Image (cartoon, rainbow, N blue to C red; front, side):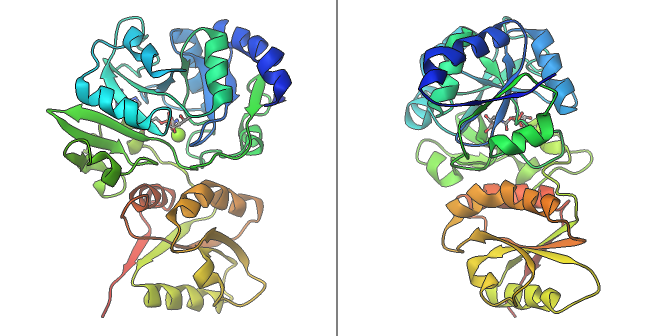
Length: 350
Ligand code: TXA
Ligand code: MG
């Protein structure tokens, strides 16, 4: 199969989007841009399309898919009930990086919901993608458009790397703004429970109702015997090819630890660090700067492309610098914990 890159321009909205909608309506797959990461889209009302998504990603089929709608008003067609709190959250954050879990109607097939009686829905910010959903006339089931276990793609080129020859088309809407997948929540007895941290933070949600983090993911991942509400959290995820260790906590200690690796010559190290730390490191290292320590948004934005950088510029081991878990830091550290397979070193103040 030939994979076509479709740029978002005037011709996209006038013509091309309708041909892509047709592909979706007939059970085919199209990768689409969002503000979080690129998605791999298929008709959410068609169980066979869902099976094709799992096959293209190489993903276990008990991991449910997120359903993307073109407008908040569409949700009622697919779910049994929208509560006043859910309505408020949709008004506040949609279109945007918040996914809400609802009890599903029967028209959503079990293949899409991964066998669950609930369905996760969000309305993405991308105009191009909402036009695609309208052209298809059906909601888009869409997990991140990477091969299972690899870092999520935040550019159309990263999607092509994983999906070339597996799908007919990729909509190229440029780099994703947020860079991390959406926050997945459910409402349990009036409390907002975060099943997967993301672009909409705990602090932002707390303004609407008491908000907690699903305890299965507080440790950053899921251990044997734990059952996370978002089944995807139990899988190996986001891993770069080289092993990654992340240092966080006391800044001085983190810096000196990272500096000590820059002086070693036993292995080829890659450095995934803040601008502040990079300024103290010698020249000539394989290095990716995720942004300033004062700017978590740039860290989130560069996280996955940074991890993929070390697949393109191979090293034996990646030494990473983390952040605290306030605001977006919770989502960033959740992804880094998984990407490193729990190799997080917390430096304490003496
Ligand atoms: O930002 C995003 O959410 C991206 C873009 C493409 O929209 N999509 C995405 O999809 O990250 P995916 O499939 O890679 O991750 C979906 C997450 C998984 O952790 C899954 O277990 C959880 O959402 N999820 C889906 N349906 C659920 C449900 N009914 N109950 C609880 N968790 C659910
Ligand atoms: Mg994913």
